[in-house]
Image (tube, rainbow, N blue to C red):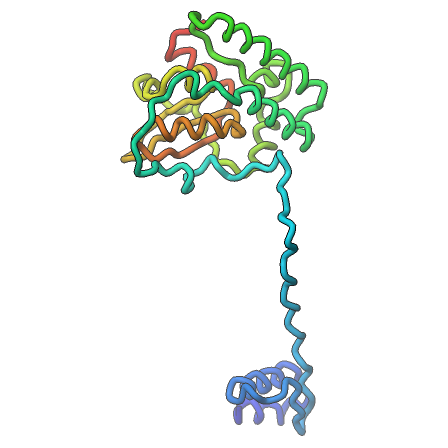
Length: 253
């Protein structure tokens, strides 16, 4: 304090030194007033603290349907619960396939990643392809995905995927650089891999790495977690790459 007061004698009215002295005095004597008058000048009173936030309203705020939680990275929801695993059947994986595509369609249109006309046309093709597969359960086939149909319809891949990642902050994996083991892919039943476009591609320690091209398919994520004795790490991937790898693994046309 004495050193700074000595400096202030040589630099009368210096705001920097005056503030330092005020800070020192406030530290030594917290009960001192914020505004301190000295023979050499006046210290401005510090800005008042921001007001405390008001109490939240009693009515809960409902998030819009198209808000996606960051569920493609490992979270508590993706950690394997300490409970008996349940058998996964095609019936368990079947619900909400169409709902997941519709949720993704609303998301793309809402954030202007694709036009409503293109999205509706791609969604109609997806429904037609998947309805045909359901009508012929004895035929092995890969369900259609909305993003894949949009890209096949002419939408540019990189801008579309970049926009989705920028908006959702999902983890992304470039599967085209992976040598995916067919045995890892077939750790999950076909009702998930072919029926939900879910692709397990690697295992590290007790963690199974899984790629998906529809991050809105929460039902598929739940069923995958219940079907394996691993923690699950989720990634978003290029739908064309997922399509190519699954067709190669199952020898589909």
